Structure formats: C-alpha cells, structure tokens
Length: 113
Image (cartoon, rainbow, N blue to C red; front, top):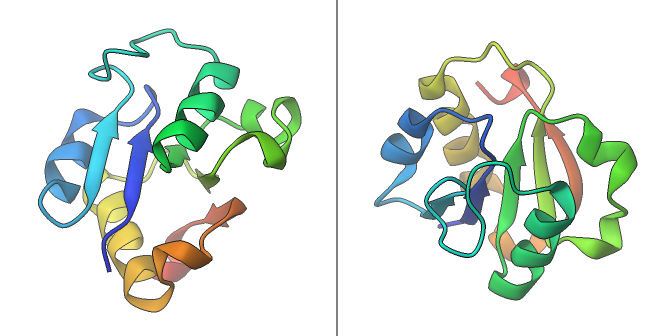
C-alpha cells in the first residue's frame, strides 16, 4: 500500500528516486511551500495539511515538535543507512502497515530489512 511521504532535507534525493512510483513522495527541497532550511514546525504543519508522513534522520523532531502537530514521523536513528536501505525499509513497512495506521513518531531501522 502506498504511503504519502515528505522527505526531510537530510535525506538524499536518491531516496526520492527509489520511492517515486510506488509511493506519493515529496522532498522538502522541491516542495514550493517549504524548501531547504525549512524549520521543523513548518514541516509538521505541511505534513498535516497534505496528509504526509515526514521521513527524517533529525532527532530534534523528537523533542521539539509534539506528536499532535504532525501527521506522522518515520524517524531513522541510523543516519548512515544507504538510500537503497531507507527505501527498502519504507517499502517493507508499507507491506505490513496500511498508511492509515501510521501515526505519531515511529522509530524505524535495520530491523525491517
């Protein structure tokens, strides 16, 4: 099942390329309403307005933005994961959890591979 995603600026554009076509995905760098350097609150607001889960390595999101201010966050604790692994993990999650069940802060990692 396809996910609606917003990739934070700390994710490589290769992740976008690998997910495009299987998921409805935007990168913050390319979203006209956001752009590189957008703060976490702007991403959270955009995720609610557009019903998108934020994908990030940014651990500031955990403490700085309350869960009721964003649609969902897929937080990758290991920022050294290759783009192919990030995409594979999101694909694996989407095979198990329908998008409607993905909410709040979700810590995800290699256990999905």
